[in-house]
Amino acid sequence: VAKSGKRDLRGTGKLSIKLINNDKLISVKIANDNQDILLSTSDGKCLRFHLDKLRLTSGLNSKGNRGIKLEKNNFLISQAVLNHSLININIRNEYLKYASETRKNKSIKNTNFNELYNNEQFLLSITTKGYGKRSSAYEYKIQSTNGKGIENIKTTKKNGKVIDSFVINEKDQIIMVSDKGQIIRVKVNQIRIMGRTTQGVSIFKIPETDKIVYVSRLEDIELNK
Image (cartoon, rainbow, N blue to C red):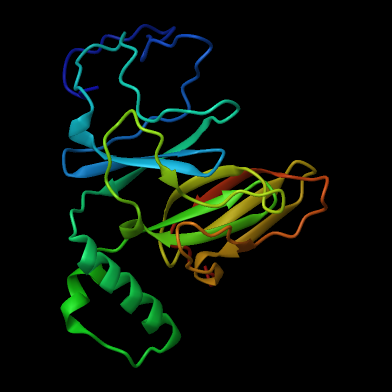
């Protein structure tokens, strides 16, 4: 929906999107034509598409376009806004291999990848059993809307369903809360960077009968403050 245009809102509010078949609105983001949208589901699937794939509408009472097809008992849990990026797949694979090697050996340098390194974004995915991982946004190819998507994180009985997936920075922290009221605060740079199709590592150890119900990003926190 375009931000421009007349918006005379009553005190009772106004319908922002037309929902059908018991659907629910889960997220609203501001984005521009130079960005992509990444939709993530509870079963660990995701779909990234360029914003121009969505029809722009000035009206609020519209049901919109289908972003990703959902299987039975799978539901959308988040959307993330990413910088638009079109990289040759071979160059992308070379960079991801290089980035993995440099995390193990800081002395490895390749100035040919400076631009990719400076523009790299990371997605953090958290599951109900307290598992999580960071993955490079370069691993998520751009697709057309209305597809089934690709794997974002491998979900198993061990790590549970996905509760959230969002863009994160190295200096950020996150807060995780369980359904029994346990809470933990974690530095993002302590969470491993892993491939898109992995199940992540344990971040918050909780009893088997408990589950994570909330995760929030704390942006660029300085611990000494």
